[in-house]
Image 1 (cartoon, one colour):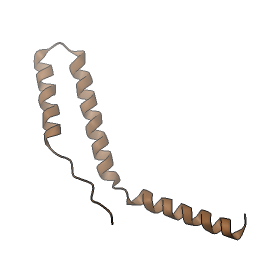
Image 2: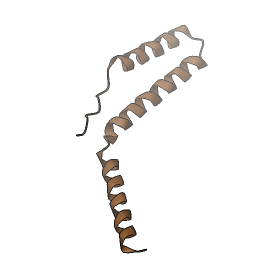
Image 3: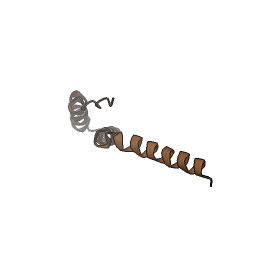
Length: 76
């Protein structure tokens, strides 16, 4: 590998690492967990014919959706 290719490759790797570590992973994981819980609750609701269980699941989902998640701060 010649000198110019090596420099360009290392620069590209550094840029990609910088982009990867700037992402707010905590927020992304929180949103993923919330969506997974909602999916699980919807699945649970569809498995039962119990009206009380379905109403409870609807209430929990409404409570989860009512609280807005923190918005991702914009990086400048």
